[in-house]
Image (tube, rainbow, N blue to C red; front, side, top):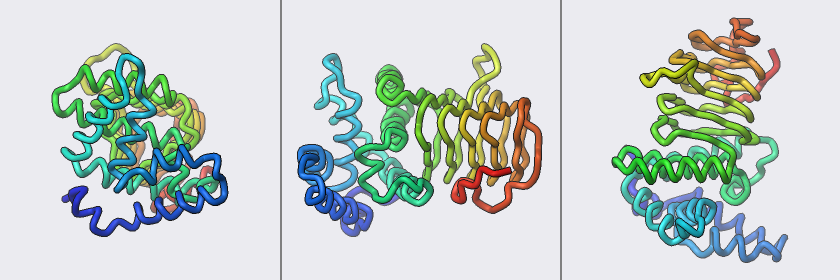
Length: 265
């Protein structure tokens, strides 16, 4: 069961680390003081900082920041899983991306992390029956971050989307926990079906750059999909698939490909 934001705030090493890194950043780069203060130091906890960042990035003249901030705040209060998942996502990005050296980098600069957090608010809206507003979030996430994630898709925690460019995740897609994917990945359908038509990705899966996983198929836990592959059939757990169409070329090589990030066949 997820902890409430109030319970998390009593002891939150993730937020403490973010604040310390933000203060250190101000010393190293004073010109970023406005960004760092408004995005981090002005807030009391990670939930408030996430809510501000989502609202700021997605706001328009038609949908002002304050209105989106109220929606995001309501989502954070209504579903403790959103902030729990955000913490897991932060750790995932920091541990798996060699270019990431701090918690504040994803929070301030990495569009993959920011897009996933915005999706989580949109998903909360979808589950609450507020589908039109959820579609607004989907539209703005696509415009701002170049990731098209349907708000009905189910995405777990510990997600890392590296380089986060041209990502498509369809309406009935399911992405498990501790999954890593690179740019230009599609989790899509194979035609005009309107039923359950998108892939189901197991825990610990690594999806390489440019891979396309199409149809209502299952990718087993701890598997690897090589870059540029087109996957049209189920993938057993702990296997590596590659090619067009993708075929099994060996074992995954480890228990958690998404963590090792080893893409060599």
